[in-house]
Length: 314
Image (cartoon, rainbow, N blue to C red; front, side, top):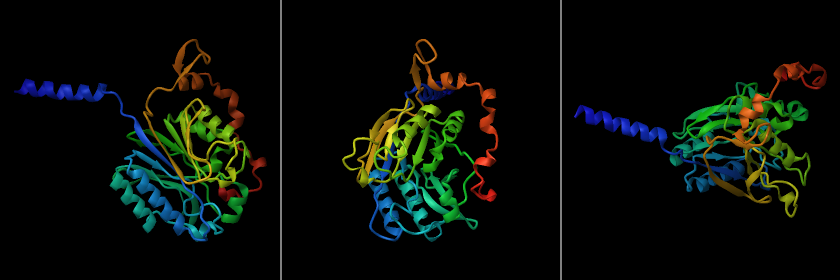
């Protein structure tokens, strides 16, 4: 009896170890603006969109930047800010547990007397896994909204893979995405509120380059851009970009929509004939070719370039 029990346990263990990995189902939710001057309709539509996505049993649901602000809402950060114990966030927690899904619900957050542009991450049981706080803000936002920038790169070790988050202006420089690449994330989530017609600030190029530079998949999640209706140029605000910088799925440009995809985030990210003959894992080639001692200038404090902002913002 003892030997039989041993072999049963061994068989179960080997099956778990060698069974093919199951792809994760990821839902990227694109919201749209509203002709109102209140954050509540935006928050309510976000919860309704979570319900719609939840019916498809996703492992991860991601929403766009600043749900309680939204495009066209002429209110200040202070007027719309929520703390992490707010009733709206409690609803998000309940829905994460109801659908057994991770949920990333970006908000303007108030905490300890300060304002942040944040992305709380809720776990499958509704628990708060952690919070990413936007690390880069435009000068005008820091000055007018009195927002505080974050100073950390949290990596969320989810059961579907290692995930990092960047919010909107965080992609203004290549380094944040590269930091996450060096932290060995499998996916960068990129909630944003970019609404520039046509190529604008080269949204297509910038977003694809960040995925390519970091050697990771990137999930761009934005708001509907009706001003882009009929435009052939830009990517949709909400799209999936693979580790080689290719957009493989995207939402409609000008209306509320959702992208659902199934992907195994832990599959090796392979490249061919890039610095090597034949196939190799992309991140090993990319990071292996770096010569960090030549890049020290990138680590020097650029005080002469940031004299526009108060020191306490950093």
